[in-house]
Length: 48
Image (tube, rainbow, N blue to C red; front, side, top):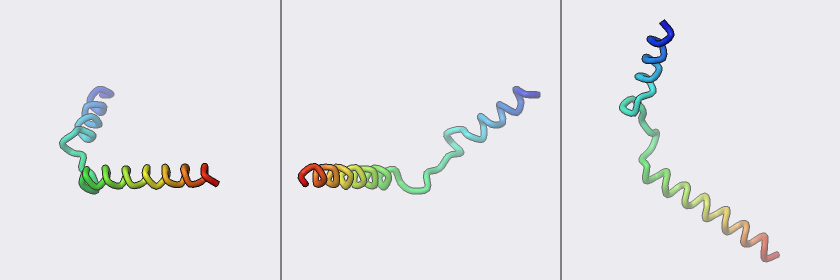
């Protein structure tokens, strides 16, 4: 019985069922912009 429920969980979380809420390009650009902002702030604070 336990193996059956694990199989159902694996099937529910399989690759074909998952969908991103936005395109991967958006995630890449957003992450890059966030890291650049953090780097800018760190370098700006270091200058003072």
